[in-house]
Length: 454
Image (cartoon, rainbow, N blue to C red):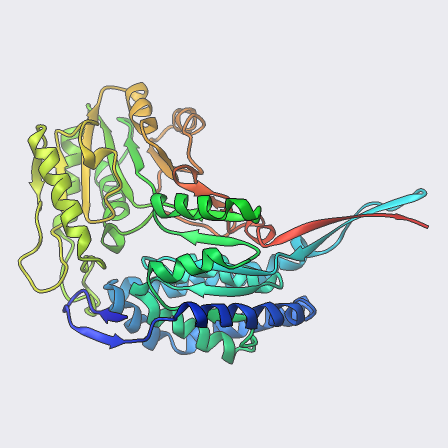
């Protein structure tokens, strides 16, 4: 496996991918380790995760630079992700007792009834490259606290970060036969699907997620899929500060170079303020500095995968051929690395790929709408259902739209946001199951009902 810096196109490191035999050996090791790990007290399991968080903080400079080097995330955003992800450790450590403790439902009478929770066993965590800390922590930290062993497959684009997770978890006290990394590309992932694991937790594209679900369906084990989105944002004509809203929408669209599952991917603006919004939106995006992601003032870095350049080019070409107008960007940047110019398209409609297919890059289409009803119909015109945002000064007006949106998450006057207190879940092609919140703790255990008479 060759790890390439997307900003310089230079090889960072070459590592050896795991063979099928090695992957199976790691599984057998974890199968033994898990049985002992679940006997360890919850307090001690939590303490290991807390210690891991402390080690991450101690090594944050090295870890942030590594993340920037191997996937191109601007360094300030790399620091932001690592620091922000620590909130998951705080949440899990503070709430695990509440949601994992035995519950007595009937304490009186001849037959008492109790509910207990047991770990799933050995689970696979097939993770993503765009936010390895956030999406990784969502799964492997909660799973470990619940007493599971984890076969963690980092993306081949952030394999070095994955190896750092393993190093620091082991150093924090997680046994080596409880957490392991599986190194490789899609072929390594396929081996995991063949193993008799007790659960599969995947973050990535809809097509891959669907393939995983189909491949393991016969096992009848838990499968959670955190997939993509084509997340809409609507700006009503009663917003108080168009400039502020445009800045918020732009950041939601272009943060992490647009490579976020919950990034704003299409914008609808009421016709009464459309021209003003587009003008302010362009001002904001033009202020973003693109360049060397190790520089603190850079906001737009390179794409992690060079293949995405063709995807964005095809969307631009398709949109222009159907009447869209490029008002900013529209092509690969003329510089070394996998850079794509921040791109804004207007005069767009739903015949265009850019308005219905996931972009996963620094590109956005802005469409004019006549009223809330048209906006709602267009926002709902998608196979995805991850997030959706409404900007309005009137909560009742926004609530009327939000309650009708078929999305796992809805936002009022904000966007591109995740909270540990609330479940992160997708609908339709955006996934199955939930991470975060108490649901994201219970996702890694199986209930056992006790009927006690005596």
